[in-house]
Every structure is written in C-alpha cells, then in structure tokens.
Amino acid sequence: MLLTSGMSTPRGTPTRSSRQGSPRIVKDIESLDISRIYQTIQCSMRSQGLSFVAIELVPESSVSTVEEREAMG
Image 1 (cartoon, rainbow, N blue to C red):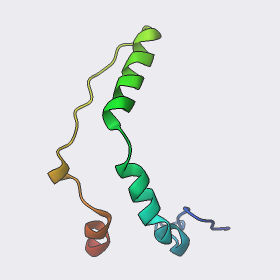
Image 2 (tube, one colour; image 1 turned 60 degrees about the horizontal axis):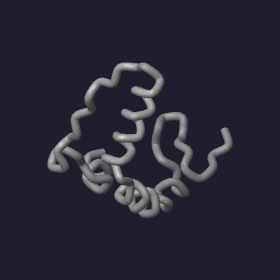
Image 3 (cartoon, rainbow, N blue to C red; image 1 turned 30 degrees about the vertical axis):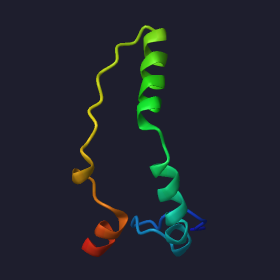
C-alpha cells in the first residue's frame, strides 16, 4: 500500500509524514470561523427548502488535544 502525506496505515495509525504536518493542520483548524461556517450551511439548507437541525457547540473543556490523545495511546 502506498502511503503519502496525511494518509494512515491500514490500522489507522498516522504515518510519520502526517504527524509532521500536524502543527500546520492544527493552526488551520484553529483559524476556522466556526460560527460563519455554521451560518453558511444554515442559509444554504434553508434556501434549498431543507430543515436545519441546530448544532450544539461542544465546550472547549470537553475537547482533547492531539498531545493528550497521543499520550493515551
């Protein structure tokens, strides 16, 4: 199996190249404007006549970090 940057092994373990790219991915995710994305999706679904179920934001204290997940396993 060919493994490229950002891909995982068959067992789901990140490849070395994907772990090296983690800081950039984390910065990209942290810079997202979630409320704007939410509003965009909501408006798009309404314009198509679809119902929109409210999305509840998860408290930041309930979200683990990459470092915490790596330490666990």
